[in-house]
Image (cartoon, rainbow, N blue to C red; front, side, top):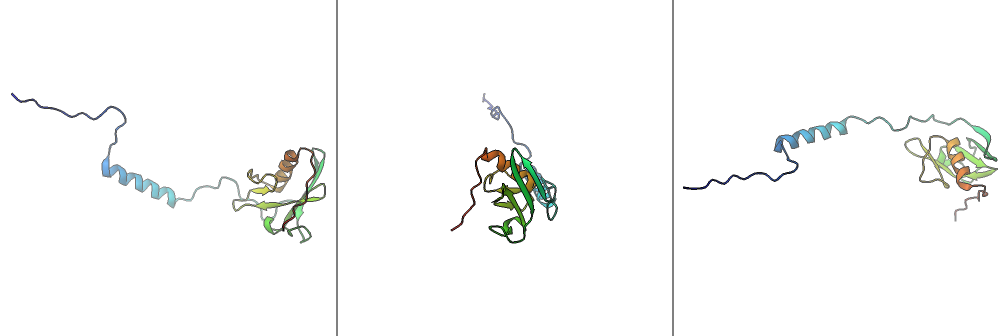
Length: 133
């Protein structure tokens, strides 16, 4: 008499579908690449609205720059922001969000929001002008 040994797969997750499963996965991946994803943030207007307000005791202003600022607003698409009369270096990202030298890794939706975030981060300290050598 001979013995017949059956091999059983080990317990745990099983892979099914083999080549057919891989092909389906590739097809789905291709479809995801082909279909454009909705933007995470709505498109910002070409030039944000100007603002002039007192926020947490600090005067913040923003508006189209006329070349008079430190950088002439070239990183911000011709837009400048000041805190108590000192220029806050701001930049608009490709996705329409805004950052500053104070909160460079925390993008926000508008220049007003970036000015307010900088005021909160400064915690009463003066904004020191940015000098590039």
